[in-house]
Image (cartoon, rainbow, N blue to C red; front, top):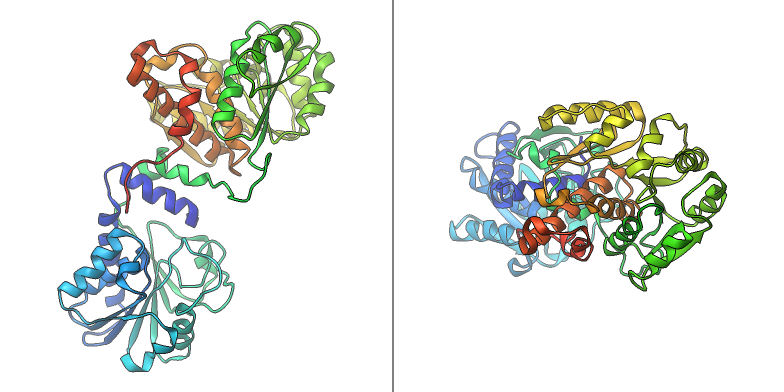
Length: 483
């Protein structure tokens, strides 16, 4: 089962793995044609109603595989307004092959009786479109629903939300649905025969974090300050640079506001890193239980807390970490020395823990040299722990015990100190913007590694952690395959 949003990510990730969308469209159209043959008889009149997106492109491909039928394809719109290159190419292929096609730009001009079909292929809108049908799609849906014809929908009946099975208005009442790669949650609610077609998307498109995962970031054009996340970094003590790196990385990953709670002497150092960092100092030279109430009050006004960078492992500090987590019920990224406290604490907080493999062993987890074995160990430990794990390594493994992802960006130069602090900050910022902790952590690992790879192009193995934050914005952009 896969949601429409996740399916769009997987589709893009497949392209990054070398299976382009054009190839997937060819496989999808062929799958529609195969399923269609099981429902129709040679010579039947077939009307393919094509939208201007990739769903319509799938149907245009299918038309080329239906020689034994009397096929006619209708495009709802002008060919020059087809939204993707590959869909336009497949529509143009029908024209060059002199297969019967027409265009419809006015709902008043559409008359289903004119085509007198035995079967209608509904390819107006796919899984990525929600909301009530507009014209001319609404008129087509009404006519199709009242006609005595068999209806096959491509991916999802037009007008139906693939994730819920509900419709905001008129929707196509399909007899059969051919969907791709995996079942969609909403299709189970339909009174239709559903066929799930394998179109050649590799397993790695779901397993490995890739550019498709960047689709999870969607900033509202009308958002205001604070809408895109407020992050509190709690750190500093024996180390002053770590919390500053985390805070700068959180800003570069899109958080609107980042504050740093740290010892007074560390605050002066952190303020020197730049005017964008807001510092909230507490008395003393390290975190202690007496500071916890102050930190809890600060945390209440933030979307996420990044807890651990540079705190150190003094007994009083670890006691304070445990006391904070026991009382906190929000979302926190736990890193560095604070990690060792997590397994022993009963907390209502939602935690994203970011250990390297040595820290994971300290927490009670198991590691392995082979990344596939490590995936299983991390999944099992995350399930036992009840929190999300982002285990750093050559292959980053991210799991909450149910959903598991693997990151492959990064390079050996990132063994330098501080890159984990950057990752913690990025994770905190993305967790404030993305509902899924696994998705946020996976995308953070991907972006952190890409930033490190960009830094390595300039500095090689001599890169420094401070080279990464300013490269995070570019790492969070998809500059790959177009359509």
